[in-house]
Amino acid sequence: MAVMDTRRGTRRSRNSRRGILGIESAIVMIAFVVVAAALAFVVLNAGFGTTQKSKTTISEGLKSATGAVEVAGLVTGGGDPSTGRLLHYSIPIKLASGAGEVNLQQNLTAVKYFSKTVNFDNIYIGTERTSASYSNVAAVFDDSTCNPTDVADDEVCAVIWWSNSIQDNDILDGGEVAVLTIVFGANMQPEQLDVLHTELIISGGSVLTVERSVPVITTSVVNLG
Image 1 (cartoon, one colour):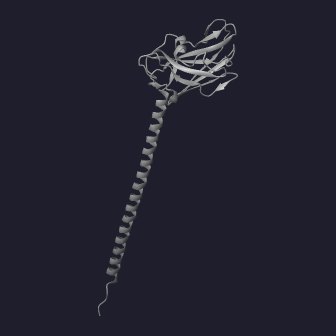
Image 2: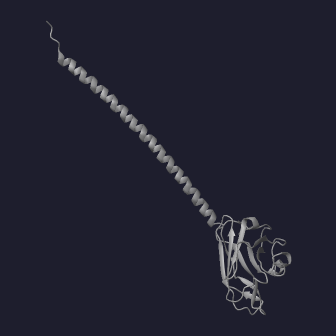
Image 3: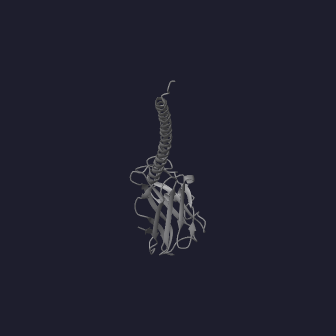
C-alpha cells in the first residue's frame, strides 16, 4: 500500500498562500500610490490657484499705488479782506513719482469737501479744457460755470484745470501740472481758523487728502501753505 507524502502537499499550499499575499500587498501598495498621487495633484492645483490670486492682488495693489497724485506746490486762495472770508482756493497737483497717467473725467473722479460746519460728498463738476493751459485762476473763471459769481449761495463746486499741459485731454500725464480749484457760494465762504478738508478720489488710485487752516485774511491773495 502506497503512503502519501503529506509534507510536499503542505509546502505547495504554503507557497500558494505566499503568492496570493504578495499580489494583495502589491495591489494595496499601488492603491496607496494612486491615492497619494491624486492628493498631490489636488494640493499642487490649490497651490497654483492661491499663487495666481496672490499675484492678482499684488498687481491690483501696485496699480492702485501707481495711480496716485501729489500736491505740486503751494495751496493758494482768493480772499475778501473786507469780510475776512475765503472766496476760493486752488491745489496744484501732479503725478507721484513712478505713477501712471490718471484720467480726471467727471464720471471717473470725485472731490469730497468738508469743514467745521459743512460736508459735501462730491462737489466736482469736471475739467475745464477750453484752453489747453491757463495762466491763472481768473482766466478759468471766465470759461467755467464754477466761479464765485455763478455758484449758488449754498453750494460749493470744484473744477480741475491745467497750468502746464502737454496733451489737450482730461488725462494727467507725466510732466503736467493740473490745479484743483474749490469755489464757495456766498453762504459757504469759510472764515479765519476754519479747517478745509479736501479729498480727490481717483478711479483705481489712492485718495489725495489735503487739509489746510484758513489764516487771517487781510489781502485778496491768501497763502494756505
